[in-house]
Image 1 (cartoon, rainbow, N blue to C red):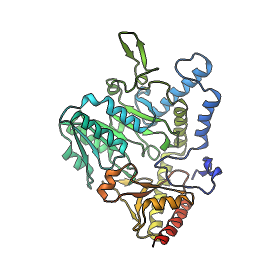
Image 2: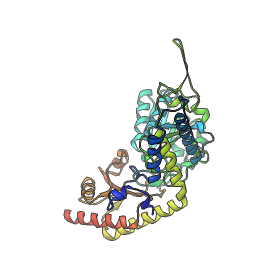
Image 3: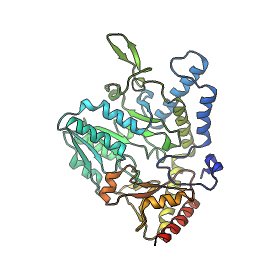
Length: 398
C-alpha cells in the first residue's frame, strides 16, 4: 500500500517483511525528522538559552502535545516519555509498589506480553500479594466479574494480543472492573494497537496506558506512559537525576511537576521528534484505510494458507475477540524456528518462538509458533511469496 515511503525497499528490493508486530519499518519522513534534529539543531533541551536549544526544546514538547492529541489525553502533562512500553510498565510497578499490601490482588490475562506480566508477578512476590491470571473463556467480561473483588488493587489488559491478534473489549472490561471496585487501578498495554486503530484514553476509562514508538513506524528507544494527572501527581519519581529537579539542598530535594518528574536526565529527544512524525504519518493514511488494509491482508492470508497448506493451524482468538493484522501458526512436523530460519534465507522475515508470551503458549500446549504481522507497506504479493516459500520448506520436511 505504501511501499514507496520506506527506503529500506530501495536497499533490499526483494525484501518480504512480515514482522511489524516486533518492530515496524521506518518511512522516509520519520528518518528525515530524526536526521534533521541530529544534523541541524542537535542540542540538549530545557536548559539552553541559545537558539538551537530553544528549537529542540520546542520540538520535544510539541512531540508531547502530538502524542497527547493522538490518544486524546486531557493535558500534555499526562504524557511521560520513556524508552519503551516495557519501561513504562516497570515505572508503574516500581512507583505503585507502596500501594500493594499483603493479601491484595493483581490481575492480568493469559494473553499478556512478558512486559505486562513479569513486572506484576514480581511486584506481587515482593509485597506478598496474590497474582491472578485470567484464563481464556468465550466471555471475558463475565470471567472478569467472577475475579475482581474488594482486594483487587490493579488490573491490566492488552488492547491487542501480539500472538493471536485479537482485539480485547478493553472498555467493557474496565467498566466491569470499576463497577465492582472503583478503586482498582486499570492499566492498558496498547503496544500492538496504536498502529492499527484509534486509541482514546478518555473513552476507555483507563488509569494508565503504555505503548512503544517502534511498532508505530517510529524510532526505537522511545515509548509513552499515559496516566491520569491526579494519579501521576501522587506517584513518586521512578529515577533521579537532572531535569526532574525543582530544587536541591544538602538537607532536602524537591522535584519538578508533571511530566518532568518522571523524565530524569537527557531524554530521547531525537526519538520523540521521530515518534511525533510517525504519528503524523499514520494519521495521514487514516485508521479507516489501515483497518481496511489489515482486514484484506488477514483474510487473504487465511484463504491462501488454507489453499496451499491446509494442515497449517492458526492460533485463534482466545477470548472470542475480533482480529487485527497478526497471525500466529504451527505446521505439523516443522519447528517454527526452522521455518523462520529457512524463510529468512529467502529474505522473508517472520517471527518464531513464544513471542514473549510463554504462559499463553504453555496453556495452548505448544512450545513455540511462527508469526506474521502486517504493516502499511505489505501487499497480497508478499503473502504469495511467503506461501510459496513456506510450501517449499514444508515439502522438504515431509
